Amino acid sequence: MILASAMSVLTLYFAFSLGVSGLAKIDRQLVRPNGTSLRRRLLGLFFSPIAGRILGAFEVVLAFLLALGIRTELVAITNAALFGLFLLFKLFLMLTSQGSRCGCFGAHELSAIDPSSVIASSLILGLAIVLAVLAQWPSASALKWIVAFIFLTIFGWIVFKTLWRRRLENKPI
Image 1 (spheres, rainbow, N blue to C red):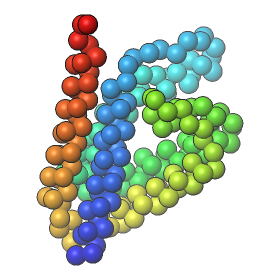
Image 2 (image 1 turned 90 degrees about the vertical axis):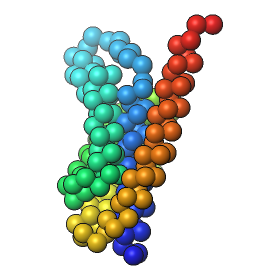
Image 3 (image 1 turned 180 degrees about the vertical axis):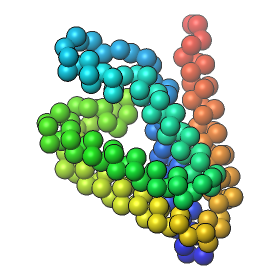
């Protein structure tokens, strides 16, 4: 029962992390960065609004697969790999001194990438690896219907509130 509880808590944590992060990327306005240098255009391919929305959609799909318990063994490994890539990217930005104002924590918070940020990402990657290991045991997903219900209820409310906010923003004054 402890194994199933730990698996459920970690599954909810990562499903909500991915779901909310993906929803924020999808909900962002499409704004193209200015600049014509080669470096700016190359970085623009990876950081374009379209690339952000594709990553956001991938995160939301991964969140749903994780929360609904669909192919949990493979999805948990994919989740760990994604957080591993995020950590590598943070390390790259920090080591090249480009992480001073990257916006790596969402559209509304420009936070510098520093050693504490890398340590936090390392801890999150560790939790993702624990989830991937736990997902390999069939008995660990005994409570997956509860996880699915909690995720669908709360995430559905978040999507509803996001759509409602968009409706109010687009309403003529």
